[in-house]
Length: 259
Image 1 (tube, rainbow, N blue to C red):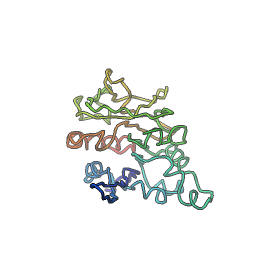
Image 2: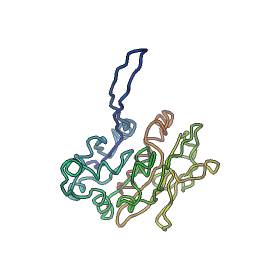
Image 3: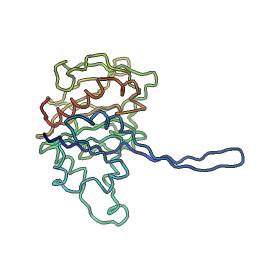
Image 4: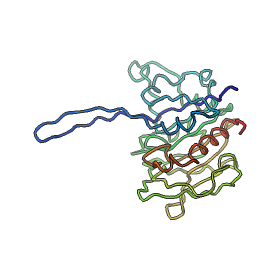
């Protein structure tokens, strides 16, 4: 039986540090990947995950809708819009190049499953540097982005309030007692009948949307405003048996894959 193709874009970064030891100092550069929990959760599933880290996406993300059609779902996680808007052909050589944000929108409209995951570079992100507001990708989402830094940092943690029906395909088998989360992006719900909030922050933390589904043309779209791994999503959440169930359910719903 063939597996459903899914493309995960983002979840990598490079850190440059300067170390001071008295009079002397030295520098170091380290590379990090943040998608390992999701990669592991999908390892033996019905989904074949292609993981395209942020630094590869600038040139590696498809430039045609025909190439995108290989995938049934696209997950955008902690990667800014500029990574796709400014490939080397544009940024370095000033050559007209297909707008891949429009390709994602059009691919979704014809039936693709689009998921945006929260982080410092998705939705609007830290210092509004995610830059997804008023983009073609935002057009396809069940939420809109704020025009400023949208982070909700909750260091004491919050427990998600599950308000969707227990038999919803994404919530099936998860119960209502989820582990703590440490943050999310604040977004605005679209006022449409197809948009449904399945989980939100508790009322004392603002009641902001956490898990939202919607439709765009023939496609399914989903916004998860927290992370897929630390720091907003603690290790206890990753180790929770419901973690793998949540993402397998979400992808099955987004791609219309039978359970």
